[in-house]
Image 1 (cartoon, rainbow over the protein chains, first blue to last red):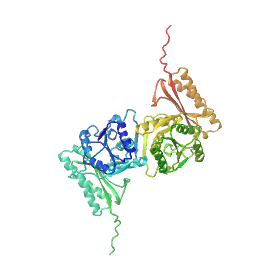
Image 2 (tube, rainbow over the protein chains, first blue to last red):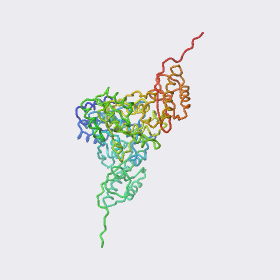
Image 3 (cartoon, rainbow over the protein chains, first blue to last red):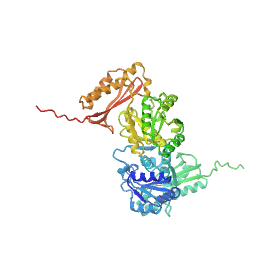
Image 4 (cartoon, each protein chain N blue to C red):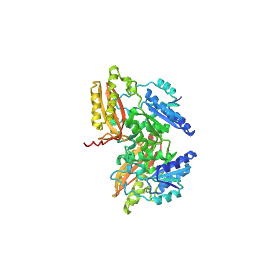
Length: 292
Length: 292
């Protein structure tokens, strides 16, 4: 596996691959790999002839009160894991390599970032779209792979790529969960004993919502209330948001129909966790009551 | 000359040219060609094997009080002129082709756009960098050509291309002037008789400034005052700004040294005109007086 620290190194690798007609799959990450990252790389390996990943804890997407400095890092372990899933090259730039002194250009996707994490973390998605635009221009991938756990991130990047006429196709890979149901996240290592147990209320409440919808509930407010009640019963969990939006554009709805996203963000101790579920609502509404 | 109205058409032309190893020169314009535009195309023709131009009056770079709707257009004449200078393909998209309904991504280059036209026309450069990023991604040029008259535009696009890791090289082509010295601009057709005469005070004041510097003046305030006095003597001219900044980063200076930009914006009637001069200051300061 090729390890590149400079833009020129990774560019010359990807340009050569492209000139040989190879399709390039790309998995941008902030490192500290878990099975979720590895699932993205494995998916890339299945569909592309060359797989490139990047590890870059992007300062621009962290708010001033957020965990940039203490975000977990273990580059050596990441390299070993990437080799195991067959990654061909990994790009690990320094902050200076990505943001040289006079850097001053930002990419912002509006509307779709007005809700959910975009609302809770001002500036976060501008940091994401900026760094991902740069990475896409450097790597020039045919397909880029993103995890469903960060659903709004993937939807935003898809919107951005379309708006800016980038050639890359964005593929969403299902969330990987631990045995107990918690969505994998590099931030899960912050969770201590009881917190971990409390955090399980997040996937449990998603399952509860799915069950309610399966039982015929079509009122998004009632579904959100059911989730809210379950999370609120857990004293260590502090709810940030519980929202339901239409797909693919994340727009507000007053009735559950078609495909919708149920998304949760909550703090457990100091750790901010997110999770979501895509619900496919069967087309069985309105139910016309039988006349007696 | 190939005429393309859709992104897919022009993309397939440029991708094929690139796959044949041809270098692509690109001249983005808002149309209504004058000799300044044609100079950009001729320059592209000299250095690139394929020359692509675009005509797109970009609504996003016009302010609400500006002249988007009445901006001069003459596509048929533009096509004839482009053929004459050897343009190979011209891209003339509709507004809907460039900005489909859910479009919501913007590219913004800060700092370098804080002064000059960026200060006078809020949002203007965000419109420029957004559309140019899109055009660069569509065309994928090796070199793009911009006129020196819009110096801040070229400097901003150069910064943007570097920041976003675009492969394109930005080339600046000297301002083309009419016989009377007025910098060519599509907006010059707005000028009526006496206004045109009044507008000549702009290039004349630039020449005056150049003379002052040649005579040893090194105080930017004094140079700006000389320009200001000449323009203020012309009742039809309303000064927007007279500024001197260091090159290439457009930073404030208190002493004329190295390369500097003297830039003017002024309204003549309702017509906003800009012009500028790059001054190369001889390295002869401080002058140590002879002791007697």
